Image (cartoon, rainbow over all chains, first blue to last red):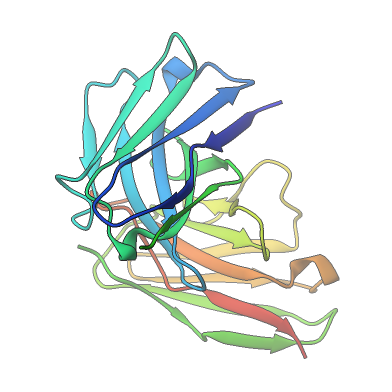
Length: 118
Length: 108
């Protein structure tokens, strides 16, 4: 079945870096755009970044632009999120999600938790 | 950026009753509107897309309506498993893809 599994979260000090991964299975990864969405503790959902199916386009939320980089390796069925210059306000559960052609997100991973704290 | 506003913030409903959730966009999003359900400790799940199309495996008691700036999610007869937080999301004008702040449906 379709599955997305995130990893790479943890506790990190402000200003440091972290790389999240999302390994997918059960569908042809190379034909879908992919998103990262995060949820701060007790808060709602915030879209973070998207990458086109072939990696040709990337877009970012203003809150992470210039600090985060989304990428993918279609040969490994893996999505990445490189997070640099982390801030306390980046503390959240990070979900990867498959993008439908129409633009909504039809399959989600279970998430990985990132805590930025000194 | 399109701002999505959901109301009410919390809805108290008895099992078996009807629940009506609202979502308003700050400008027209046509029918490019999705609804997601999120239970505590779980990932969001897509319920409705294109404002009124149920996603695969979603029970018929969930229905969506609206277009432009006003949208509604209706749960016709609440089951115990439906108590959760519901988010609307627009995907008409991006980036960014924007979510509402959520409506919590709780047991009355």
